[in-house]
Length: 442
Ligand code: HEC
Ligand code: HEC
Ligand code: HEC
Ligand code: HEC
Ligand SMILES: [Ca+2]
Ligand SMILES: [Ca+2]
Ligand SMILES: [Ca+2]
Image (cartoon, rainbow, N blue to C red; front, side):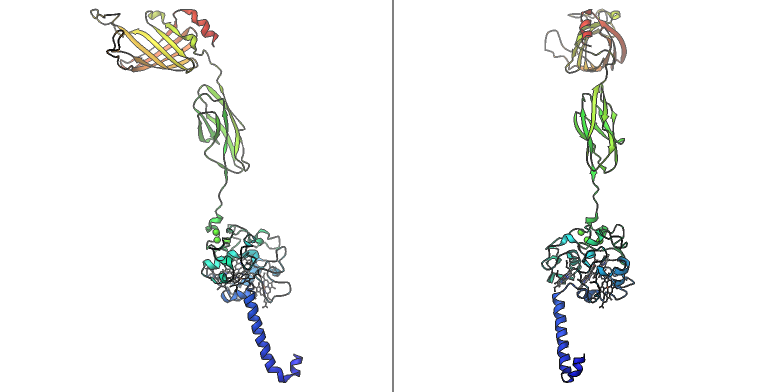
């Protein structure tokens, strides 16, 4: 200033040219370095104007952008945005750095490190912020930043933490911590937080914030199973029927750290199954080591075998009898029952061959242990040694059960539908020579 007073003659033109240079330089620097807040304030206003009215949702902040940011979010930590000792201009992506915070100014909260390296011009952290402007119809940013247009680049999701959120330290207890804003930490004056990835959806409304719950299966292996009807449960539910040996897995999966407990809810026929490694706590992995082992039940008595083949009768109804055939490889039994009608036919009824009162009944079915469960049939309509006329197809007339108590004794019980006949009688060997064979096979 002293120099100016000494050269009054040149004062006016010099001032004029200095002003011109200042205007030119200011204009030039503004055009070149578009990373200062002064490039944002033509829309967002002076950072210290109070109250600020949100351009995003119209909320009246009741205070300035400056005070809400520095006081409510940052515990007065000036160097988060400022360069130490210089308050004149604030860069959007560089600063001295707050206490324990990286020197990246606004980008610590309004940008994500993961978006870096995709912009034609800048570091790139601000891709989500630029796309939020683009999505809202503010397309100015795309003139300089290629990553402003969603068609050119997709920023990382809403749920990816900005740098400061991940590292708030003890000095900034109010700093936002969750970009999905489930804890409300991103909301100060607005009604929602930030649209961090710029797709127009905020926080929980953004599909990136939908947490898929991870679940784990519970299963294992079944061995030794020969019977049918085995059923397993997990935690007393989710019943799973098992038909064969091999691996199994319950339909309902469980979340990590949940308890599981596998039990047998129905034992298979003739067997008992036990569970090993059946219970525990899911530890971030599928459970596949539950071992179900099945064993045949200890024999409760006599076992039906081929030593029971051939002729059986009830001495008190001598003249009737049964021929029994055991097919032990298929657990099937066939019985031919030689018997009579329930009443004698009149004396004048005669037959060409044999007795008109004879009845031909057969029974067949399966056996398990000492019990045979059979269906009873009668055969009628044929003639001796001829296929013509053919006998009627064997007609099912009821059921028969035979329960053995030794190789020489059993109880036959029957239920005939028509005429309705229910009864039971004991049978024994007609000749005893197969008894030893039957016993040797027990
Ligand atoms: C041409 C005007 C304009 C300029 C320049 C501008 N903004 Fe914006 N900004 C807007 C508008 C309009 C919105 C609200 C968009 C909406 O959500 O509908 C907005 C929204 C925002 C938001 C809120 C984002 C969110 O997730 O809700 C932030 C933060 C922001 N601007 C920061 C900046 C910064 C930093 C700059 C400078 C680099 C800047 N803006 C430059 C117009 C502008
Ligand atoms: C969230 C970032 C942020 C924090 C934190 C912050 N400021 Fe600022 N400050 C700004 C911005 C942006 C401006 C406006 C710069 C512009 O308009 O070019 C500003 C402007 C200023 C100005 C005016 C400078 C001038 O030349 O007009 C002063 C003074 C100031 N801040 C002081 C502080 C102090 C003191 C603290 C700490 C208690 C602080 N600021 C914390 C962002 C911040
Ligand atoms: C006239 C060109 C121009 C326009 C238009 C422009 N910028 Fe920039 N921007 C720059 C320059 C130059 C830089 C600094 C680049 C550097 O040095 O890394 C920058 C840096 C940034 C940064 C920090 C760098 C980063 O990692 O992302 C952000 C954020 C940013 N601009 C946001 C915006 C937004 C938002 C708009 C639109 C509202 C916008 N810019 C419009 C030129 C521009
Ligand atoms: C500590 C994290 C943090 C830092 C650092 C930060 N901001 Fe913000 N800013 C936010 C949060 C969070 C909001 C939203 C608050 C709300 O809606 O209640 C916000 C909102 C804004 C808005 C208002 C948008 C609108 O219209 O709704 C602007 C503008 C803005 N910030 C600019 C800046 C600028 C410029 C800087 C750097 C000088 C900066 N912010 C630094 C977290 C931060
Ligand atoms: Ca998204
Ligand atoms: Ca958010
Ligand atoms: Ca979003």
